[in-house]
Image (cartoon, rainbow, N blue to C red; front, side, top):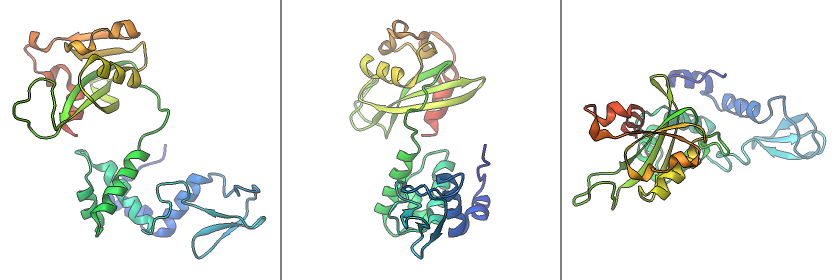
Length: 243
């Protein structure tokens, strides 16, 4: 597995120049060397506009076409800093923070970049979680007066699933859900977790019936235990605390 820059200094050493960034993208796109999309020729030169021109058919290939960098006017070094910063944040990344870190004049640019990166970080067709998995819901947003239980008005209700990896956390899945009804929470479980897995939840009635859908449903009724919810379902609460 490729070593990931652990610090900003390591990032700048490795990707501190536009040439280094472009060479890295070239290896990602054509691991065995350039191949023309039209004639499959393997020889090309680079224009002043950083287009790769096939020596055989003169087809002009863009290194960034079809990527989040397509049509950007900003240097790739700035994009790489943005990627590193977003993935390095334990408490989540904001557009305002990205704007400040990169020195962008426009908040809209920072917001657009952040959403592009978030979409790119979701792998289509990814495998569902398996093994033992903790599941719970939590709210994103401030306190709401006059709202109790699992009801929301302005806050977002987010379902969270965390694989158990010994005492640690394996893969995780998060999804905003409309409400905490059985239809919503069980649809999330079916989408996020492989049948045959052990699903560990609290005693919320919305999870009732998971056993009939191919899961081993382990229920911990929180009020029957002296330990707190954080102790009984530690992984989902740790993930929520970092959101």
